[in-house]
Length: 543
Image (cartoon, rainbow, N blue to C red; front, side, top):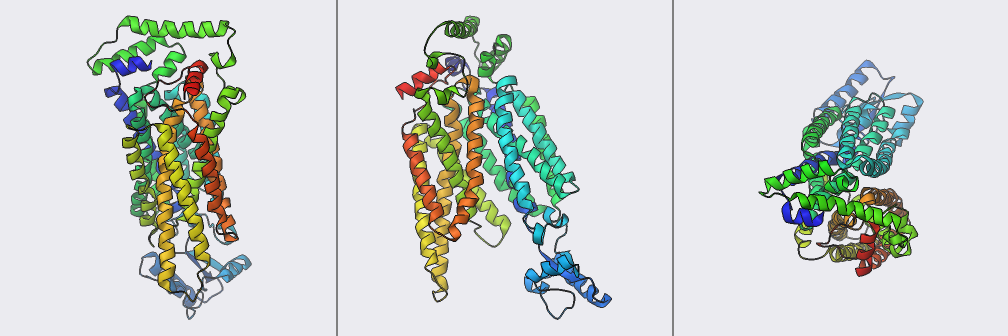
């Protein structure tokens, strides 16, 4: 199959169209991953006394109106003790609210779902449950991607993902309670992750080996662009979170239409599932746009050789590593594959934990959350662009190894800077404190830069390490493991309150172990995709 794609249709019009469609879908799905930064944040509010006189209530309402219109430029405008009915921003507000002696007045009632659903005081952390359910949805989406993609096809799985993603976004916009809102994030997470996993597999199976790095990295590049674009959409729709979700929902349904029209099935899946007629028609159409015609004998030989290989393998008594029947468990049960499988799983777990650990550590690069979020997202773009260029000249394993080494080094530096920051006291100059903070910020951004590069190339590298029958399932398992790393990272960072150096030293140790495992993995640059365990065995043993 790879020889046929390489000679007759390496990257034709239809393959470019498929790649563009899934890239656009990835860009429009990206905002859903971080939307709670803007619509789920704890709202600004103050406690207005319910028993106050009408004049006092009018004064409190005037302050709230001025704040809502942007006339109050400082938070001190909310904290004038000489205005009866307005209480200082302190824990006593929650006590008065719980006792029923006052009622909450929000600065922007509709700007955040948290303010609309009253997620303050004892409910201030409830929005984290919605984010947790989103991560649970991503875990379920990983499983759905593997099962539906291998059973019913890559295109069918992407369409299912777009349905979940679009309906989840619409459900979020129409939610009338926090419970409904949280469940909608679960549905959205299923769609986003199912789309991400299947899209990378589809584009890697639709082009010749020389173009796989470009197509798979482009999906991640567009995801980062969509993430950076969220700050712009959020700033223009800051008055209403429902309006922001409405814009994202319209974009989601538009992307679904593009995917339905432009995305075609993977030729590798068609071949593996004996859809020979459909495969022949599709490949001939692709080749025709390149000005070529595939001889019928090549298509017949492709189909017959595949069937003979399956029959001979099923009837033979070869070792398990040479059987055509492939299960994910084979990659762990068989000794020849076990080390490589565990190394890949550990690399995914570690880089995701490091990536989100560094992201959560850098709270922003300015006082404006929209600008801060933009810079935190845009730093990934140069990493992905460099990855696209570099992968043409060096191997996947080499690039992943050295970028993982860089991430490990930056985490180690962060641990020492964190220790340095604990030695600063109130008597030290403001300049020293700012210097330490700037160094921590710079090192963390560099770490995110390198970890983003590792993340993007893993999506290219892994499909080239797995045989066709379990390619999507294997990627789904790795994504599930990576999500576990993301969930653990905040708890690891919380450890730093008592032991400042501990979180990043742990990241560094995990990174060093991952580097050792990656170093022993085989190189896949410009090699054919393995279609059976026998192909994978040859790849692993030859290195």
